[in-house]
Image 1 (cartoon, rainbow, N blue to C red):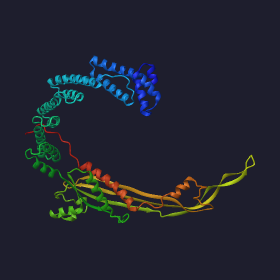
Image 2: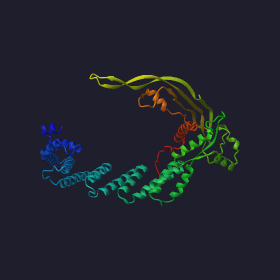
Image 3: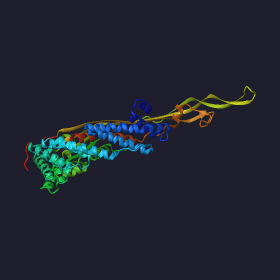
Image 4: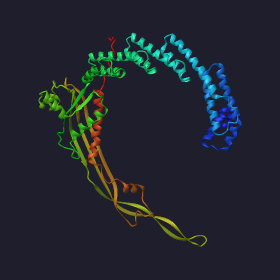
Length: 474
């Protein structure tokens, strides 16, 4: 490819190809010789392109070409192939960068005067990217955000205004009163949602206000109130197993509830709390509610305070099928080799290896176990008695083994001159014990818990979407 590029006069492309060769094989003499011959021509070709863009005023393209040229010269030095004196590339890059930055700065200034703050920010950032700390770009960006925030605030777009005030403070720490204005807007939004009973939303905004300005008014007290009212408690009531069956001696209902609880708590927000049955009954006693009302979902006490939802579960089927170990006498064939003497063409005594088949007898052993759990888990709204979640349980798990043992044959089947069929080799090495029943039960319980936890989180642990107010008071 390098040689083809030289033929068409594209020396810089050829140089890049030769350098690619040297990165793979640093001492490849042909590539070294060829690159040495064209290195200056390639440099001059690239420099001419950079200078051409610079003369045309296309400074971004010129800068890209100069940076490529700088990388090219660095690689030539790496392989000791810099056989000419290049221009001061760093000076050229600095000159072009400053010129490009000035160009974008002028454009930004014009946009700023026109109050096109979004585009002004983009141009100021481009200027700063070309030359670090170019002029007063950071201050102008902060002022652009501040001005945008003021415009949004006048249009009652309070949240967008607050975010722009925050952006101004991020750009220049302590910029004007951006911090106080952002905190004030979030505080006002949080206070509004607190009065509207949107407690989670209130927590979000009040938390933001507190993080920006911890001492702002009575934000801590309001945040505590919102957090307390946003708290959602879900209690496990009972998990019946009228089948009377279990797996591996496990109390299936208790295991399912505990695993659901663990799954939910690992992903839940700060607002969601899970109560076990004992904690629920303590609450019921404190409120003088008859525990008998928790027999099933149809008798849920509507006056229970402190709990939003109750969870009931029931197993309709617990099934385990175990075939038991079966043993089947089986016959198959293997091959074995042996030496056979013979006389070659020159009358010399030789031996050759020959293979023969032989019968072998063994036992094929099989075992299988399968388990099924089916039922339902329900979540009931305490205040309305409405069914919120109705999760059907239908889980299966199982295991089976098949292996060969008790081999009988005329040869040692482990000998070097014996070849067994691949299928028999696999059966000899196969697993000989079924998976533990408890482990299989855990697989089903984990699957039930994951699915139920996802439903609880997606249905109950969510902040509802609400529109910001059209007008707020400070």
